Image (cartoon, rainbow, N blue to C red; front, side, top):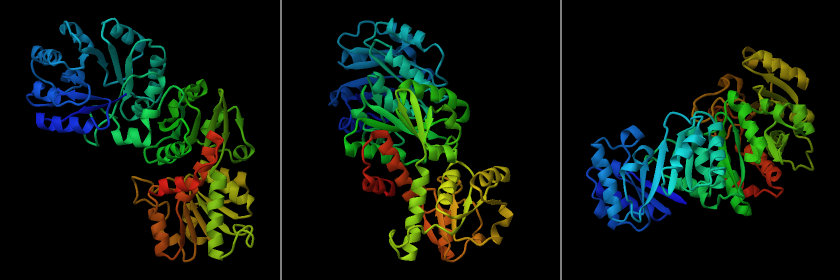
Length: 491
């Protein structure tokens, strides 16, 4: 079920928000701790959906700062007026007394961490005799979410549980799969009642929260950062189009957390992954199988979980090569049949030496391109060049080489740092093809500079769509709705 908190500061504003929330929510949470002098009788008279009345004190992360007995008195008044639920802190449950027909939710909030003794906390909450318990923590690391999922799976009692904060957003989406009874969503940005709370629009229209159940398969993007990604939009839209019971979320995982996260993947909590910076190479050690192309490249951007056996492949390589092929064909005015290998013999400069650079370098090398690598850390660039069998140059040599195609595989210029460029405009020449694999923004600073110099530009959207379509097919064994995915990303 979906619950939308009402966080207006006046009675009139709260009534308006309740009416709006009732259009989308199964239950509305009336946060009277936000309201100056709440008029409970008027508020409850206007409800059209069941309500949870909450009057949370500041010590519990709420807004109420008055007398404690008066705070409890307002909750008792809500009971006398027939509120369907009240949310009461675990240390104040005994002060409520007889709740009549109103159902109690005994809650525990930890805004600092997800403590080690979750099972003990849950057990203590259950012993309070409420109708439902609510255990909310703050996620300091990605694996905190999976500990909450473990708790939900074994709770055996009606429980609301998820993590707050940016890292906790996945638990807000996935908790229904593991038995969570209620999901909270804000009416709009700026109306959140807790850190990391998603909007009702995001939960319903992006993640299809109403369809998430125990059989929902979980896919997602493994990387850091991930907030810029359009992956959730493109894959969830494709799942909807194809009628597939699956959801795609964003897993922000730092290097130190990768081992723990991959252990939960292996246990079956995640069915498949898209992999991005900085894990395309480091994820390989967790895989049971890797396809020959990805093995040769030494970088994986797709992981599929088959009953605990993790298989990796690389869809960046064919996606990038095909996108560049098509651009060069258009320039030549030829079809694929007339110009079979437009990349063959072209001088290509690749900026970067990470996982994407590896995929593109090996792919273009197979097509007969003459490749040069440039990377700020020259030793890494030299290592890649040695493996590919091409040369590596320093950034101080960029102005001295003649190239037909420039490919940026770094994150320089990616949202939100959109004014950045991996090179100066002096490197760019008229007629040069400039391919930036960044897709957010669609036209990076590098591409803008290239256009001003008379270059032919190729943004990252086409590569992104093609590699995502290949991933979708690996995840689902169904043909990807390519045109829908292209429209979704471009929109």
